[in-house]
Image (cartoon, rainbow, N blue to C red; front, side, top):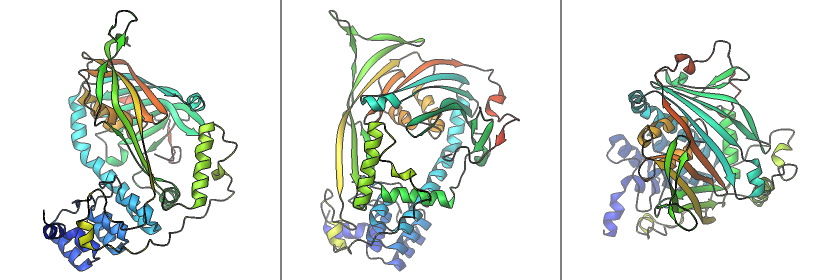
Length: 445
């Protein structure tokens, strides 16, 4: 493709690059070019507006629904680039929009999800989590949990004992999460504390203070891009026996399962810190060292304030971009010119070990499990499980999985029991009458 054609192929990007608001408004109003289009470097128009600090372009793009979550070829989202740029109002605007777009995306999937749940049989399922680590002090802190899932029609209830993690201790309790697909969006997600007999509805909007707190955390922490790479993944039958080796097959609960070793699984992590001060770096290092030692008496300054710390201020803007549009769009895709603050990035790749037990007669399909996980992933620690099950697995249903959730922490999930049940009472998905509403019981919900 010639350079002239490349220059003309991305009119939205070109308008943003030149901060041409008039032409940008005209193109957006005509809907003649997709607002989420990526250029040769994987950047959307919003990426460019953020990196170049063109604030009016940012607001215009956000008003027209520019996606905040999309990542470029380097794995960074517009919010990541905003944190690097360091302008607090810009970060706040993108964070608010990201949360709103996430809620809208969930609501858009709601109809299909409800229909899929209604087509499934009603059931009761029990699964156990065992969290393990090769780091002894970390391993000592890790819990286990037995979760029970009830599904009836388009309603799901998840009962769990893990409540929170604070001061290096897991808070235990008796917690129930309820999803009611036939209720209004504002009433569809509920969490109950069965010991305190209180409940809380899912809040659809964060408070001003919560948003500002999150912005403070973003501005004082590494910008992280992490993923579990499955490009070269392999499944090899596990062997058992000393003299005569044979494929390993064992009972997992009530299910006979074939065991596999999973190879080619890698945790890829990159961290950017060009926006951090030396004080930030020292404080973050102290927190990590404290967590690793399992000792909270030293190194955690965040609780030493008698009053909340002052809000983070915007950084001075980075030097003005010297690259022209032609130089940017025609540069090698692996090495685009710097448009914002000079990137300070550190990356690592770690090999992960995982095992899997598959049963070909399990009464639930993987596609059905994904529909259930679509709901409960927002409740608890199920998001990684959902990502894992989406991989191309060997035949059958994964009744036992050793899945890495952090570089040093592995979760073992065992499906202990499953049965279809046509007699689950409706009361399982209702708040008992003697429970009271407490909007502050679960601050993160």
